Length: 156
Length: 321
Image (cartoon, rainbow over all chains, first blue to last red; front, side, top):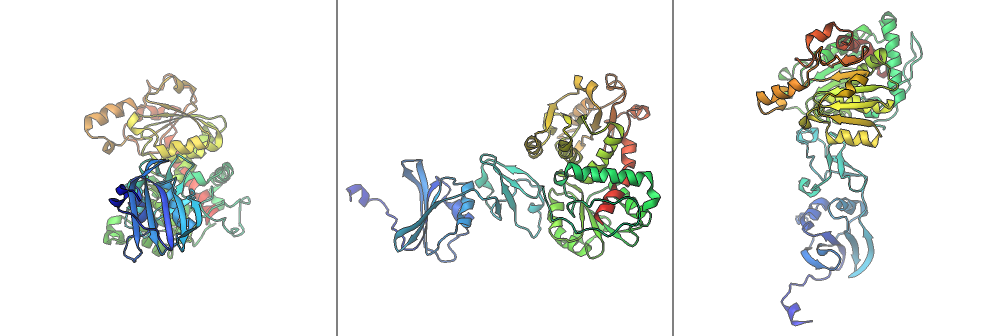
């Protein structure tokens, strides 16, 4: 350990759980929102934001102790963090490693940007968006509006 | 483009020719219709128009629920005329001000209740996607009679019927002018015309051009579209000119509205360069975007278009009920 390291806050390894690495810098809090973790259910969370990265310049890291996120749960992250990698940790070792993949649809994750969309009225439905081809964004299945930039701004 | 499961075979028919049932129970958008679906409705509408008496008791005892959350004259009255001419009747939600909607009832609850009263629902609503949402809560056929600036598929079917009768659908060159951004009849018509390889010219001010989602779909469908800010030389090549109303409330002030609306007005002078057999259509109501002097010309087809609503909606109901 170098003297500099003594002055840095070190985030310890987790024993069992999920590490979401290579998250687009600044998106860690949105990642938690999307996977439905708000701290109230007691998981131990560690967040690193704007961590220096050789590949991306800066990245975020999210560590969730005691919970293994499924592929379906993490695929939604591809909308805001397409380069994220998922490490499933068991007894301090990486037991599985995979990438996020673009899902066909995302449900209950984004607000529709169209204020005249029926999903923005007080109706008993979750929003649902079809994921279009790479670069084309997502599309509300109700009003058909296309959201192709700044998707994170529509995470409630 | 399936939006619903294939319907079960319909009851055997008592008259007229065998009818191919539509592939879906709900009619939400023209995007769900293939060329074959559209032609089946138009062919059947022609049969109805040729001999309406043969269909008089076809749906005796059937009830059509009219749920109009927005004002309507033509659509509502022609649906009512259509079901009554098929021997059925309507149950009408009436004005929103007099309904439980005023008490804060959701659309989902309203349609779940109303489906228990009727064999099919006709829905008009100010929110885009309302028909799609409502269809997820009912089992009876639901017909979208306009969802905000979204779609109006039954209007398109009568528009296509009118076009086919007057100009034909093959090799069609059509100009569509006016409020293309918020005009749901325009959106539905444009989607449907992709099935017929029509050459489409869209004429509108920059602020009212076709919205991105519609252009995206037309592009995906490989449609030949041309966008213009003014009527130009292409007018002389058109088979059909479809005019829509530019709504006053879309503009920040009266002067701007008058300036824009005046540029998209069709009168006898504007039609001087048109072909003699140009068909001029309008979904109505018009304000002054087509001068009344055009009414007396061979071009004017908008009243015939409005009248075609009854046989086309009769045909549609006959296929769905």
